[in-house]
Length: 125
Image (cartoon, rainbow, N blue to C red; front, side, top):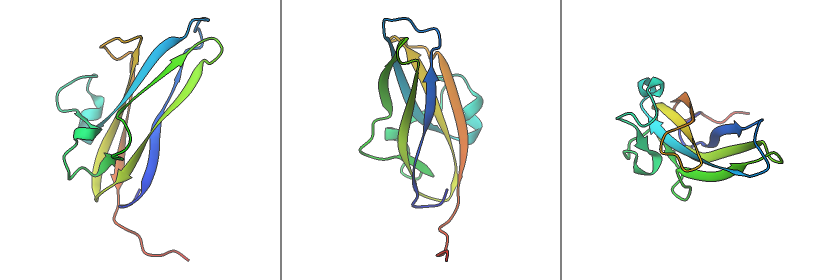
């Protein structure tokens, strides 16, 4: 990605054995330093995107929440949960997505990605 790009990133949550009763799911997005992506959910150093330092290479768009709620059931066993971001400056950032089931305070699963933001590119013809 390049400085000024607006993009979406997220996860696909699934529960192939979900029953008829919907299961509440919450997905949170966190910006981290790239080296922090291997740590456990809730470990120190993670910053919610809304509270990221102004010089973060990637930021959540101001009008978007850092947490999204959905549900899974036998009728709907998969959901795509996406968040919109902006590349604000050259650098490397980590994105982490944590999935919480049924109001639990402990993440049931997590996914982490490192992203590099490059400088602006000249016009392409």
